[in-house]
Image (cartoon, rainbow, N blue to C red; front, side, top):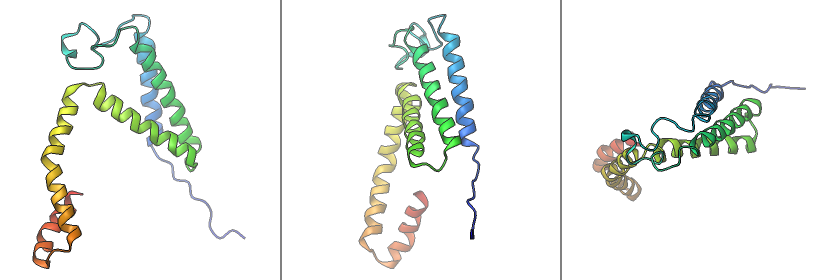
Length: 152
């Protein structure tokens, strides 16, 4: 006797990842015959980026490979959403792509922003964590711990 049935919730995220990966493959295939890409070597706007120092012939195949791997991860997330191995592949791919395309490829500006944010909010977060963990008095806890809880 079956009391409950398995509920499968469909998410739009694998579909978005599939579309994004198809776009990456398409761009890589488009750039590959020309052996060049926007923001490549020689472009004045590419100062301080990884794309500015890589050879122009290397980037299009890497974009095609990244898009193809993204397609594999998106299909895996769509077909086997509950599997532990599939989840590790999808999350690992998302983390590597987020760090790679979000911080490394754009260059110095995002890394500088992350550094400034850590310098600005790191001491405040540390102070709140220490204060919350010490068991401070109720008057201090009522004001600061609630403020620190809002920031987490």
